[in-house]
Each structure stands twice: as C-alpha cells, then as structure tokens.
Length: 274
Length: 208
Image 1 (cartoon, each protein chain N blue to C red):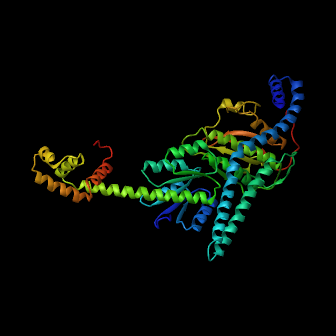
Image 2 (cartoon, rainbow over the protein chains, first blue to last red):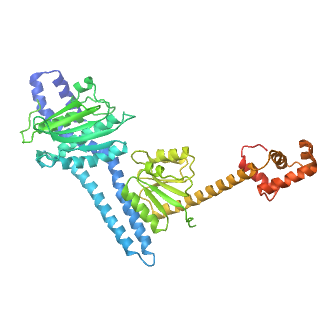
Image 3 (cartoon, each protein chain N blue to C red):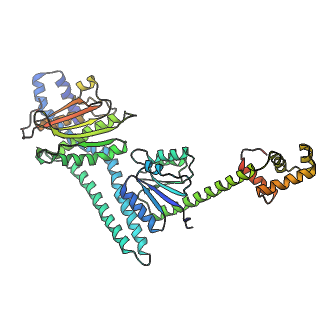
C-alpha cells in the first residue's frame, strides 16, 4: 500500500532525527495520517461488522417471530385483536431498534472533513458504548460508564473523537482477551482534568503496559498484536492533537491500562504535529 | 401429535425481544413456555423431572448456551436441546450436535421449522422418560427377588430346564418350580422371552 511505504520512509527519517527533512516530512505525515484515518476507520467498521450483523439479526428475528405469530392468530376463530395489536406494536418497536443500529453504523462510516461542533460528550459516549458493547458482550467483557453529569458542551469533531474512543476500547478488548480469570471490565469515563480540560478515559482490568511498550506507544507501525498495523494509537494521537489536546497513558488502579485524552473546553487552533 | 399437558418449552435467550417474540409465537400455537434471560436463571429453577424441551441461544454473556448444555450433560439431564443462533457458525453447530444437541436452527427461522422440531423434541423427551420409568420399574422388580430366586432367574434366562437347575442348585425340582413361579410373579413377566428382555434392560452389559 502506497501510504504504508510513505509512512515507513517518514518514520525512518524522523527516527534518524534529520531535522530539516523531518520538519518537511512531518507536514506530509499529517496529510497521510488524515488519509489513513479514513482507511483505519473503515477497518474498525470491518472488525465490528460481524458484531453489528449479530445485533441487527436480533430485531429481525423478533419481527419474523411476531409476524408469523400474527399470521397464525388471524386463522383463529374468534380472532384475538388484543394479541394482534400487541404483536404489531412489537414489530414496529423492533423495526425502530434495527434502524437505530443502522443509523449508528452510518454515522460511523461517514467520511468527512474535520468539523467541530458543540457536542454532548456523554451522549457521544453512550453511542460509542452501544456500538462497542456488542463486541464486548461477545467476548464476555463488561463495558461500563462513569460519566460526569455536569459537563458543558465541548467543541469537537464527533466522528473523529468517537473513532479514538472505539480504537481505545478495541485495544482494551484485545488486552482483556489475555485475561483468563477475574474481572474483565472496560470503563469509559468522562470528567474534567486537574487543568480544567475535558478528560475522557478508557480503562481496563487487563495486564497493563510494560515500561518498554509505553515508550513506543505512539510510534507508527509499532504493535504488540500479531497482524496489528501499529497505526491505531498514532492516528488517535494525531486526532487528539488536532483538537489541541493530548493523549496519554497511566496505570489503572488496582490493575490494567488506562488511556486518557484531554481536550481544551475552549477551541484551540490545531497544533502542528512537530 | 399434541404435546402432553405437563410439557414445557424453556426458552433461554439473553435478548429480551427475541425471547418474548418466541414465547408469543409458541403460545399462538398452544405450547406452554417459560422464558429465561440467562443460563444461570434456567439452572437455578431447573427441575430434572420436568418434561419438555429447551430452546437455547448459543451466544450469551456469562454462561454460554454450549456451556449450559455441557453442564446439563454433567448432571445427566435428558431434556432435548434445540440451539438457535444468529451465526451460521458450522464448528459451533458441530460441537453442539456432538454434545448431543437435538437440533440447530439459524435465526431468523421459519416458524413451522421451529414448531416441527419442538414437537419432535417433545416426542423424544416423552419417549426417553417413559423408557427410563420402565427401566426403573424393572430394576425395582428384579431387586425384590431373594438371592435364591436370583440364582433361579440366572438359570432360567439361559434356557436351562428345571431338572438341570435343580441339580446345579442342589434342590428338588419341586422347589425350582416354586421359585420359578415366584420370579414370574414378582417381575410381572408374561413369558420367558419377556423376562429375558427385562433382564437385559436392567443389566445391559451382562453376557448371556
């Protein structure tokens, strides 16, 4: 893939700390990362497709069951209209549930320019958790939320920040799959940081990160997963920085990993990547 | 064939919509159902003596459908299990069937397919329970024989005439005749052939 090669070359040059070249490359790097973001978001959708298919199948199954039951009820004499009304009401409800799942998927796949708007952060998290919850449940992982109810609206790109959170939850899920016993939980938190910025965190009860891994966390193409692209966290990092914020790591208490992002409550012009 | 009045179809699925819609569908054809949201909920109220069948979702948080099936196998349960799944997951279906699942259906299904399979499962459950009951009865009857009557029984089913039995056991032919009559009476067998069948049911590994 062309982007892959370009990124490898840039990453190499940056590591060799050739300052003038690095400065030039850093700008290109941002451009390519932007393209990679779309690719990566689609890859995340691909990973979730199986889960979404399962989730969609549930209301469809319920609809099929109710409509077939209605067909049978219509053959009875006398016809119980109460039961028919009830079943038809359920069919409507399930159709709405199916279309909500579709809407979430459509929002996620919409590829757009960075567009910031005042956002209800907690509502966004609810949507992320609904999307990721399918996958978590399939792996017997509890996905919980701890939200600050008094947050103001924050200027951010809904789709991009959602992508960051999904990516972090995806990583946490992979980490928890290594845990055979004990609690398997991911918690998504919202609140204000000590510095008064919006803080969003994704914390898990997995094994946590070694110091060695922490050092290379945001290096492009560094991955601890077999088949990992090593681009998830660099792209997330880049998105958060474009919001004038930071993406960081700390240990979770009592155990596990905790990734947090800080985003200023007042919009800041996007920082350069260098 | 209509199900017996005391048969219950247990529906275990963590998705409330699927669960309730199934219950509604089965009720519309006059089947008695009980719907539960998890394997644990099912097990906590599980009565091995309750006839019926189990319609079980494969994939559930906590104890999965396959794990519940294994637990029921460990407990020696006879209730037939019909798995329902949203995935055309062949290895999973193979595993379930190897573990003795009655059938496997992919969601969504044609209602008639499900109902047909449920009726077959209920018939199987009734058959298995009837034969278990008759086995227990036979074991109880054979268990009521005295040691001497047992010895006579062993000889009888090998087709030995009274004269030989008398000689082997060192008793009179008249005594053998009395024991023989008691064996037939206590077991309720109509004939020697019937007695042999009972004997084989009670002790299938026995080499005649």
